[in-house]
Length: 348
Image (tube, rainbow, N blue to C red; front, top):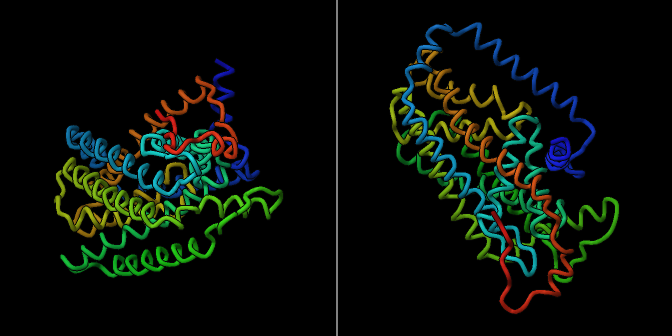
């Protein structure tokens, strides 16, 4: 058991993610959770909160969790589409286990540590460096931001948006456009050498991970996966609203997705606990919902995201640790070994 625990620790804290500041970040994250909890306890009737949680419809909450699993599968497809190692085709199922494992780590470790973990685990499968796969993950986030813009724009056409949602539309459009422009400028050129040491080597490997910028079809596939993923996120919000008897409208579901996504941009607390609940509660409070029911909804809505990912991610981490999976051959060896019909990456 101790050997398994040590392997789990190595998976959860890859060398590239060991930044030396984890204790400080963990303390900041816990203080943030404590601050939000203190504010909530001071302004919420606890008996009403417990009553609302107890009366929630479990079948609707289970449907919200199922929709979240679908959403993350689509997110895995969005990410896999832009991971383009030569000679290996990465599919959604190859990226799903590393993705949910990263989320599971993120529930316990603050400051987006899960992003390093998911990049590290997928790198073990593809033979790329973790730095290159992390760059592809950054491109995945850019695509995710860009594909959120049509969702907000569609809401704006269907119904008047509050001022904060209009500001979010402009912000996401700017970030998505600027991110795509930065990726295009940093994309690797023909004959790019991803070797080297020091900062120059890190930069070279980061650029190597942006190879999808040369493939419009890969970006188009990623965009389609992204749009479908946001559709699944709308279902998570829809079923979570239904679980506590709140109005199930496309407008409210869309505003919840936008607000909580914005709250997740800078995730300092474990699982982004605190900011996520605050964003969700503020949206439903705008419907005239009281403080206790609004907080109860926010807690259940967050649980619909966290619980399935923690369970699936924990299973993925245990499987990786027990199998003791060795990294694939170095990328140059993979390229030499492939035939005309490129093999697929093995996945779970």
